[in-house]
Image 1 (cartoon, rainbow, N blue to C red):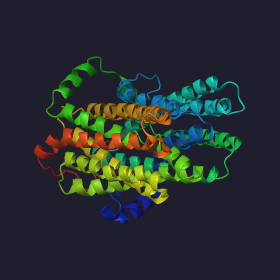
Image 2: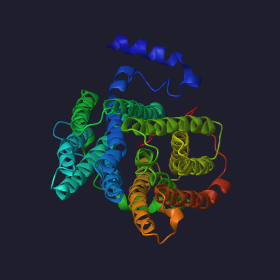
Image 3: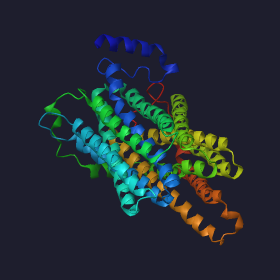
Image 4: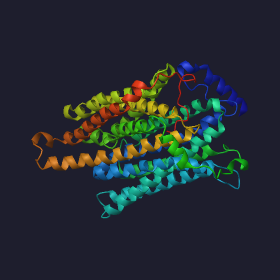
Length: 474
C-alpha cells in the first residue's frame, strides 16, 4: 500500500498545478490513497444532495402531485439545520472520548442519521401516492425523512472536514479542502447521471429501489472513508473549559465589513437558491422533459459550479479582490435567470440547460468570493469561526430561499388562475417567471450591498499558490 501511494502521488503531481490545481494535495502524512479514501464521505454527501434536491423534488411535484410549497418546505428543513454545523464542529473539537476519538463518533452519528432518513423515505412516498388514503401521514413522514437526512449530511460533512484538517499538514490544508469539495461536485455530477439513467423508465417501485440503493451506498462509502483514519489520541480530547463561542463571535461581528459581507452572502445565496426547487419541475411541466432529462439539469449546474471554482482560482491567484469576484458571480446569475425564465415561454429546452449551467457558474463565483473574503477578515486566528459564520449565513438563506421559491410560485399561480391578474398571466410559465424576476432583483440588491467592499477593499494576492480554497466547508 505504501508503494502504491508513492507511485500515485508521483503520477498525480506530474499533471502539474497548471492543469490540475490540486495536484499536490497529497503529502507524506496524508498519502493519495488515504486522501482518496477519505474523500468518499464527500461523494456520499453529493449523492444525497442530488437525490433530495433534484430527483425527489421533481418526483413529488410532478408524478405525485404534491404542492410545490409543501415540497419547498421539505427541502428547506435539512438546509435550515446547516447553521448548527458550527456547534457540531465545536463539540467535536472538545469531545471527550474514552478511546481517544474526536471526529469519528460524529461522522458515525451523521452516517446513521443519513441512513435512517433515507430508510424512511420510500415508505413516506408510498403514502404520498394517489392510491393511498393517508397522504397527510405521507407528507409528515417525508418531512421527517428530509430533516433527519439533512441533519446527517451536515454532521458528516462538518466532522469529516475537521478530520481532514487534523490529518493534513498545515501547508497542505488549502489543497486538501479544495480537493474534497471538488470530490463533492464530482459526486453530484456522477450521481445525477446515474440516478437519471436508473429512473429512465420511472415507476414507484423503481424509485423505492433507487432510494434504498443510495442509502446502502451512503453507509458503505462513509464507513470506508472513516476506517483507520483518525488516530487514537486521548491527549487531544481534553476540552478547553475557557473556550467561549459567544466571546469570539462578538469579536468577529465587530470586524470592519464582516456583517456587510454576511448580508451579501445571505442575499446572494437566497437569489440563487429560490430556483432550486423549481428548476426540474419547470422542465417537466412546461418543456415535457423526462425524469432522466430533468435530473441531468442538476449535473449541468454542478458542472457550472466546478467551472466557476476553477475560474475563481485563476482570478484569486492573480490578486483579484475576493468581493469583486463575488460581484461577478451575481452578475453572471442575471442572464442565467433571464434564459431560464423565457425557456418555458418559447418552448426551448436548450435555454433551460444553458441557464442551469450559468447558474452554477455564477453561484460558484459568489461562493468562492464571499468565503475567501470571510477568511481574510480579522478573526485572531479562529478561521473556524469565520467559516461557521459564513456557513450559517449561506445555509439559512438557502433554506429560506427554497421555501419562498415554492410558496411564491404556488401563491401567484392560484391568484392568476382566478383571472384577477389578467389573461396573460394565466399561462403556466408565468408563476415560475415571477420567482425568477424576484431572484434577479435580489441579485441587484446583492451587488449594491457588496459594492463598497468590492470597491474599497484593496487588491490582495494570496500568499498561497494557485487555488486558495482553504478550509472550504462544502
